Structures are given as C-alpha cells and as structure tokens.
Image (tube, rainbow, N blue to C red; front, side, top):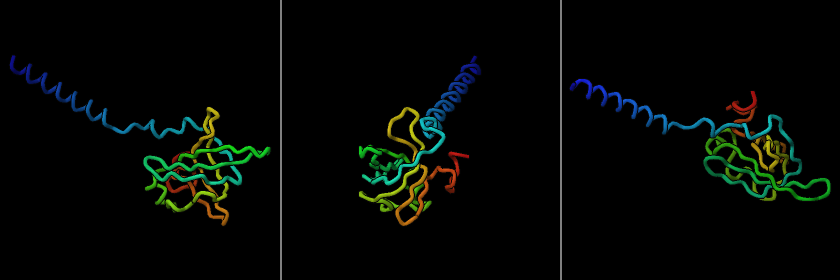
Length: 142
C-alpha cells in the first residue's frame, strides 16, 4: 500500500514539473510572420515620424504621400534594440523628418502596418531588419 502512495506522489510531482516547464516556455507563435504578406512593398520618400526603440520590438513610424498628395502613416515592426544593434542600427540611425525608402512586408488584413525588411537612407546606406533574408540572422524569407 505504501509503495503505491509514494509512486503516485512521484508521478504527480513529475507531471506537475513537466507542466510547469511547458507553461513557462517561450511560445514560438509570438514570432510568427503569418500576419504579413510574403512579398514586400516599397514606400518611396517615406518621412520618419519616430523610431520607437523598445523591447520586445522596435517600431518605425513613417508618413507617405500618395499620388493625390494624401498622407498615410505606416508602422513597421522590426527586431529588438539588441538584435538591431548587432547589425548596425542605433537609436539615432533615423530621426524625425528623415526621408528614406522603406521596404516592408505589409499586413495581410490591409492595415497600414508591416514587418520591416530594410530602409535605404538618402546617403545610400542600407539598414536591414534583424530577420530579413539578407541580414546575418536570415530567418524570415529563405
């Protein structure tokens, strides 16, 4: 009788430990790109509103004029500050008023947001997102 009670406690304790580990494990779905189209779009002459340099993802906000002169604001999610720093970005890489080319993977739902692919500054310098196909991380578009 005593063996069975100890065996049940051990089994219960093991199950509880496994469930605790599973519940605290990072969820890979958080970093899914399913919300974005597979092809990029290019926003020419995008004017930087601000760069939110924050965890878990930095966000670049830009304004773009259409053919009629109407301004549309776009938000481009990118990697964390630490990931971007490793590939050449800094919190001062862009500033409000800078005009640049922005390439991003737009949202599938038509919202004016997307996952950043790269930016090209007026001096020709290119900065990639941390998960873009040509970045050292090379995880998004293989």
